[in-house]
Length: 564
Image: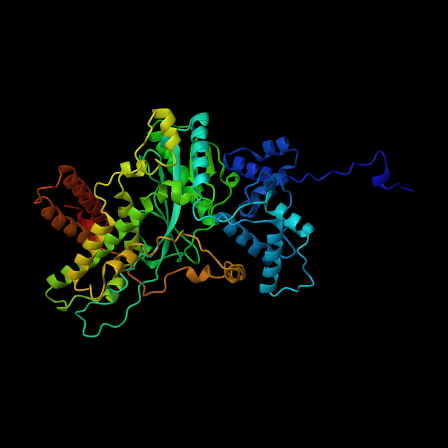
């Protein structure tokens, strides 16, 4: 009679399955990306090579799960990616928690339990099937790595004492860890209503019937990022709703474009920007200024659209979060940089409208009256927005970028450079005051015949129309539930723009050569032009000629008679 192998001393020992925590799995994925072999990793972690292979195959699932975890170390020590029995409720409550924490709202365990019961009702759950018990709360906190909830005190719109304390700690950190100002960055999101005009500018008064025109609701989210020395700015990120805008077909755009169903920033989009834009751009800058290998620090506010600091930690790259309710006081991007960029953008939008009006009047075969505002809006697309945004951002001077850090670096400057009162104001050269810009805007509208009843107050509202748009939505409980229920359902609907298809061919090489010739003839007659500008234009013309020659080589006559 044979004995059971499991009970035999000579039988095989049962192999104990080793389950790695999420943190180790992330480390393995990062090392595989750098070229380390699965065999060596398996030996180091004491697991089989096939387990390493399975981890690599599940890379997207692991990373997406890790992004949802909170910033405490304990969350990444989890081994299981098993979710909650009440997944929708769990996701809704966590969204609410992130939003409340970012705004500085006091949060406690009992409050979380009360909100969980409320979300259960909104989701239509059976009240008898769910009890927000202490056990449930502990598991919720464990799933999301939430270690502490006893936030005390009342919500404040701007916490000055917390800001001052952070500035002191920040100075100590920079000096202790020897950070270089060239490699300290700040990034911040903002919304932009990219087609809006002053609210009472409804339509050209040249039209016989000025039908009421609503201010455009088209908006995008922008992410601006620059370093503390004002010497390096990361390419602008623009987030729109459309996955493949028709106006982007077969062209290059001067910024980074990403899409999200509602045009908002979220953790996935931010992480993609961080890994594929921020880090590569900074590394290229490090090579340029001979600072390869030095530590890089990115300062962020506590927006719920930002992943946790640990999730953004890379080799040589660290993230530091500002406390809640201090961004308006000390965050560099909030010290006039984003506001200046937006005003530069709106000046360009008006200039486009003015140029279109002049262009129409100069054309003999066009209608005598200038086109209406609504028609103008149809001629402006997302590609135009991209170019105007980049030009508006590049118009902010390096000195202004640098001086925007004065409040955050106050104690750093005071101790390091012995400046008792470092300058707070930036470089105002070329930047209009509010009154001047309002006056210029009204004059432009007058010249276009578009002013109507628009006054200074309307222009001021226009300039600040998206000032409070932080690039991520502030949702009510019902809106949070709606976003959870409809998550990812709009992605396919936003693949392409809902508009008439445009030609994908564009101008021919011959047309481009003729256009360059006209531009060169005009440019060389201008007194202010520099030789380098003429040479650049000639170089672009030569590129068009090379393209034309390449096309010609494929023709029958070229093959038979050659090129002259």
